[in-house]
Length: 179
Image (tube, rainbow, N blue to C red; front, side):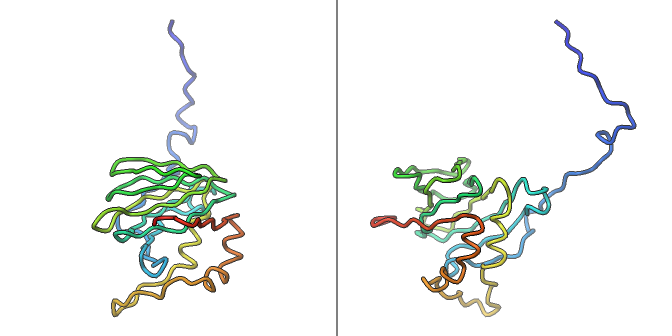
């Protein structure tokens, strides 16, 4: 069987329209999250992808685990670039190592913890995009003197309430998370 698919003519924009882009290694201003225990660099925004995708690089200090939560507006995925991580997935946990990919659909309680002795790195993807803007808006700029930013308190999370609600993000900590 020899199936032929029609090829568009050479004057069709499919041949010439350069609609893609590259996000470079050093792109993205660092934003400190959770008292500096996470440093996020937004690499790809929803604006760049017509809303389809957002992506950030997240450096996570040794031993840190974020607050379990769920997203109601987007799926989240992680590619482990460096470090050894544990993930909460609903009521279960699993481990992920460099080269592993983790997918968490919206409406699923999840969190991660860096089990390494050194800072680990996650590439974090949101579909559709938009959640990455939270880190740009609410993350702390690095202190030029090198001091860590303040810890994120209950009051700070409450102040971010409208941003969390915009992504239908619900904080869902449990009694023994990362104990």
